[in-house]
Image (cartoon, rainbow, N blue to C red; front, side):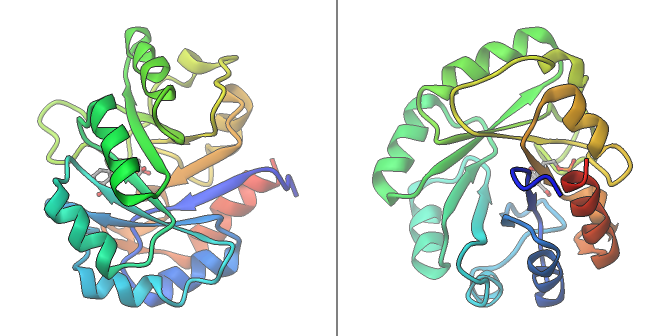
Length: 215
Ligand SMILES: O=C(O)c1ccccc1N[C@@H]1O[C@H](COP(=O)(O)O)[C@@H](O)[C@H]1O
């Protein structure tokens, strides 16, 4: 097992799925707070899912262009280890969120072509971690969680000074190839371990983590 590979299972919506992710060895569990997502959670529901997560497994809240009022309510209600900003938050907003909540920030960057990589250098100066994801397709109702991969060769051989996660269209069958091509040591998956939007499949979670860590 490759001990330095860390997997984030995102978009968990039930206690069964949180337990399956933890038991399979996930390093991070992700909860989505975005109304247009089939994985969207209410605050009470999220708190109930987050409270039993054992120490050592990081609890991540995914938000999209959330304002202070929303983040105040979220951070007061749900025990969290990271905030994942998955919208159009500016570098200044990333700085503000870090200072206001005292939580490390994972900033998502959408990649479709080589020009998008410049954003990585910009946000690397302000975020604690980056999440490099596919740009959403035209007309998509959400900025991520679309089961879409980007051209991994765009980041092959690239190295950054901060930790980062690879996301977008990952499944048990392609994660080893993604690691090989990109050199990613952290992987984030949502759709690829689901039986239906918002419903995780424990067997797929296990298969994904095994494929990632045994690669
Ligand atoms: O999962 C969602 O519904 C979602 C909504 C809004 C922003 C991001 C979202 N998901 C994140 O997108 C990436 C890739 O997901 P997938 O594996 O391709 O489905 C991942 O970080 C999800 O957590």
